Length: 282
Ligand SMILES: NC(=O)c1ccc[n+]([C@@H]2O[C@H](COP(=O)([O-])OP(=O)(O)OC[C@H]3O[C@@H](n4cnc5c(N)ncnc54)[C@H](OP(=O)(O)O)[C@@H]3O)[C@@H](O)[C@H]2O)c1
Image 1 (tube, rainbow, N blue to C red):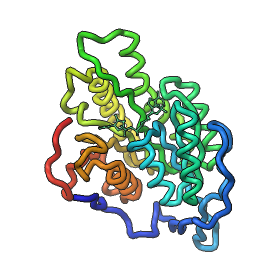
Image 2 (cartoon, rainbow, N blue to C red; image 1 turned 60 degrees about the vertical axis):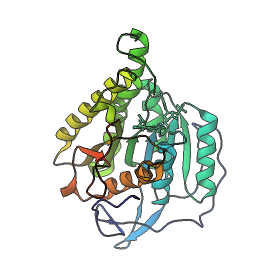
Image 3 (tube, protein in one colour; image 1 turned 90 degrees about the vertical axis):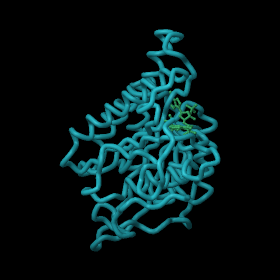
Image 4 (cartoon, rainbow, N blue to C red; image 1 turned 30 degrees about the vertical axis):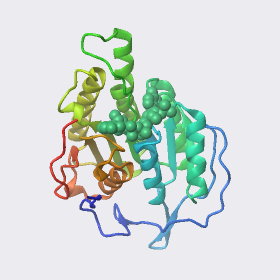
């Protein structure tokens, strides 16, 4: 079964602002090295009551070939200038150039999410270069196979730095950058938060801690214009199950971003949406 849209406002409306059309015919400048201004296509604009409104940037932390790239493409297609963050400069640059070739605005930023200062600096730089953010997706994770008794203290700390602390640093950095205190902070969780595995111990602890962090942030931000949600992905991404293709998942994030405020919740248990049947817990 393919992805079915979550409830969201009528097309063309985003947070009370008309969504711009796609800018596929914009002039583009080819991407350069990560961390510098790689793409200078003009930002998406729309006229609202005579005023020109730009779409905010989408900051995607943790972009690999799976969900991260699908998220970047989904938000780019929705008209957001997209910032791609990760450690692999060359790969990120390739992804950003690919998006530019498709007619989007995208920049690559090399940063280790486990390094708070580097991550913070990269996020601020992206907001400076691509415009104030509208969306943050924290998608980075350290996928290490380890056992509860076989863990080294340093490795464990490193895993938590990527899986949890980086999410907190990203949220704290991006919150004050949101224009009019409105925007979405979305976090990629995992079923391991609900059903920990003895074979992925640090990731299980990390996803559980991330879920708790996001739920506490959600409660703190309730009543504001900031939409905070963790997407608890309860299956393997990229396998045979069409519910877990990166594209189906990315569409769910986009729907979350467009959900009206009355629907906001701390967690999307994916794919336990009425559109889908019961999901395996992994
Ligand atoms: N794969 C699954 O079956 C599955 C299931 C449930 C949940 N999830 C969650 O879904 C998310 C995406 O998973 P995915 O498998 O589709 O991966 P992906 O989005 O293709 O790539 C994630 C990227 O995160 C980046 N990353 C890792 N450590 C980082 C760090 N310290 N700093 C900056 N970036 C870092 C890596 O890029 P660099 O190496 O370039 O840094 C990696 O390519 C993860 O949060 C994962 O836990 C995955």
